[in-house]
Length: 311
Image 1 (cartoon, one colour):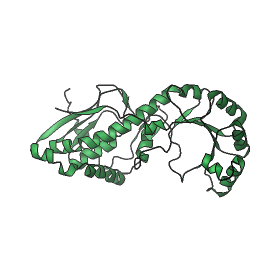
Image 2 (cartoon, rainbow, N blue to C red; image 1 turned 60 degrees about the horizontal axis):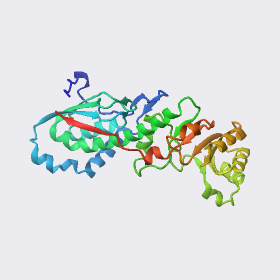
Image 3 (cartoon, rainbow, N blue to C red; image 1 turned 90 degrees about the horizontal axis):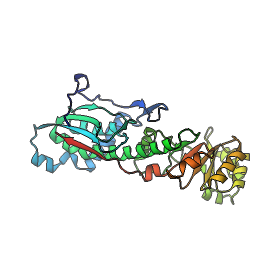
Image 4 (tube, rainbow, N blue to C red; image 1 turned 135 degrees about the vertical axis):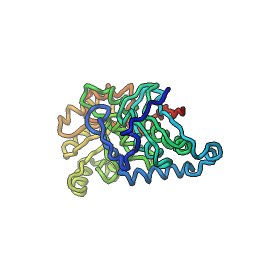
């Protein structure tokens, strides 16, 4: 593939490339990159240092220091792109004068064989940054792509697809951003941003759902939503009567979910969770639940097949 000329006005990367604001894949609004530039640079620099990119002995031994190259980052499969700002920063840190043209921003759909971005710069910098740039793009695009498939599967229902806290340690902010790039919605970011009373919490109050909800309402910070996990219909009724904001239906069959939706009658948001797959998510959505949380979005996504092809 011939690399097109990079227009003069796009020959340099802006010093601050965040926050990135582009339409999300589901068209629901703007997608804001979660890291300010200082945090972005520190994150990517750490990844480059982990990879030994500032002392790439193979490249130093084989490539002349003044050699320049052009390369195209190409999709090998149909997917949703995510992680472009991280890839740009990897190339910039290894070659501050690198020129990049971005054809697909985060949240964009791409078909197999289509280019994502073009880079022109010192060959050493491009080669040493290649793996870190691809690692970010492949992992995050994989999450965005899987999320988009779930979102597409429930289109036309009221259900929103949510992530969970089942994320890679140290990558949560980026992985939840990738979920948004795929058209999904973020659940609570961490343990401090919402109350979710699960079965083990209920065990501490002898299984008394109403007591747990009431206590959480009294002690949690003002404005924090109270969610409670329920395994049975009677628990759902008690949670709704106690004023829970969100009721999580844990591993319930679809007919029981539908019954719970009817019994709650709009008094709380209803979330379905547990064992959700692409084969079952539409059936779950048709029960009338508001949210469907899917741990697989982040813990089981397959990395996207991308490649950096040098001319």
